[in-house]
Length: 209
Image (cartoon, rainbow, N blue to C red):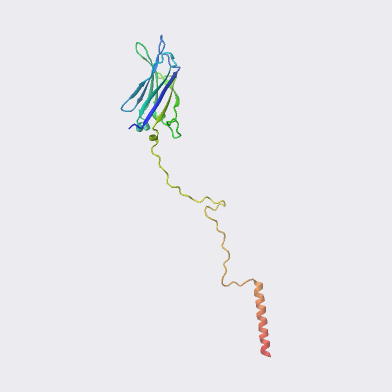
């Protein structure tokens, strides 16, 4: 399964170990993608003028297995060599697990432009000497993150109340209930008693007459 394309530009190297004792170094790079059943390999042109600071600006394109890339099983190797009549000399190499180059969710090197990186060169004696600079980008990166799932409708809840009592309306105490048994104010009851007594006196006087 090949869903990604890795585009590389092998730009330059600097301060490489000088492996030729007499003649000037003619340096080239071999770019290899390891980890898949089919090994992909590309050789750059030979820089015959830069010596330990060669320049190539050589474009490389690899087909990348999406699943193997995400599982960290692919490795990008850039080997540096000095061309000689009596046999090419190994200068050093750079090894990068491809998963470290995969685009992040912020979209860096996500098919929108080449990203420049620089790595130290490891010599055959396991010593770090010199550096390699290249640029890269991936195309078809949507396969890395998988399909985008749409979110369902978001449930809504009322905002918190400002008075600290929670999201629901704060109910005040109910008003006093009115109905049977309401007697009115005390002063009104005293007046009624006086009137009732007066009516009794009037009735008694009428009977005596």
